[in-house]
Length: 295
Image (cartoon, rainbow, N blue to C red):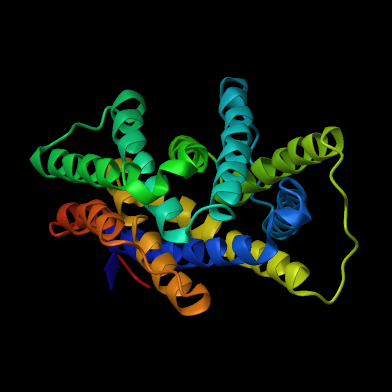
């Protein structure tokens, strides 16, 4: 027997691991494959899978006109989040990119959680915010990273956009099935990505037996499952706490980058990242809910 709170928490922990895998697949794909092309393939497949799911469940709900703006904003910030982190991961270390991504995601999550959902900052959340800011300062001003300032900035922007995406999904998930939300989101992302790829004259590669194409398939698969888990988790947790749980992606990403690419973060970056990750445990030490659900 698990409460809704704990189910949401575990869903986000698993989603964090899958998001950590995304960074590995992005590095394996590389920028030679184009920036928007992997996004187009990923979005097309995910939109198709969710459309098939909706056709089987018949769980589609009529969209209220007042919600059109949220369905339009979600894919826009989603495109920004994907492209910026994709470029950053292919130019700086995966650890540095993920640390900055989640520091900005955490800060933005607090701000938007307060503005949109009126979630208040208690002492624990405020402590987590301060830890994230301190960690962000250490990483951003690490001496060896100064020449990569542009890519550090892109990693930071990706966190802001991702936080906005998560919070918009939370705003919609109480009124619509998450399969419908993600189908519409992916379909619009596909159209936007294809449009940008066309205007930037990116090459559309035919499917082949190659490491890059296998990585595109892997990226699409883990993204599909992670999206489901993320929307599910945000449905049952406060946006600010859910944002902090997703910081675990950094741990998984660092371990995978160390094993696969032998990337070892500097001591300054590691200390800063540790401060950011310290915010994960604090708000979840008191996860309690009297409401129970059967498995």
